[in-house]
Length: 114
Length: 114
Image 1 (spheres, rainbow over the protein chains, first blue to last red):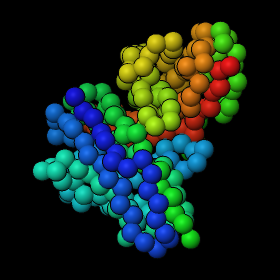
Image 2: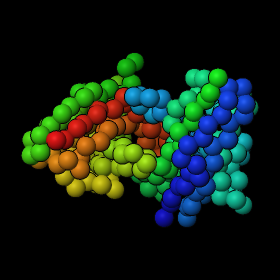
Image 3: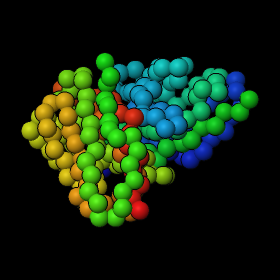
């Protein structure tokens, strides 16, 4: 069965410094992986997704993630944080063999300080 | 395009009352989903509809019913609300041509059951 573990429930960075949000997954299949972002009182927006093409995936707003099969990880990074990046981030794995079922991690809340 | 819309945005119910959450999408997507979001737990799937005329249970279906009214609309009904159903509810849709696909989320409905 698929599962997702986000290793940090809260991350705090200063504006202009790098961001690292960590995600490990477990999957019986070759997984598809996503990162979604949720700004306060908003719905979820797709940041990026991995579907077995290039292992380094670029997303919107300067974010990227690298799929590492040997480490079963899909960490999200950004070189320089912006105040507008403050939000909750969800790592998600999809069961390709099913009906597009998504399994969500518990989320990481990112705070960005001036 | 409005994408995925949900009504109402907020609702307060007393225990035992019933209500229906409405969801509509204008992207001509085949599949629609209802999730609930609780603190520290990410999103959990309540029900989904792979295509018009079909519905299936997700991870946490107890206490809910759904109706896929047509291709655009997918409603979630609470027949007898309980305090444990206090949550934020998200509707989502996807094309579902096969494989892992991006799901597009609505802005959410905040429900408080007293």
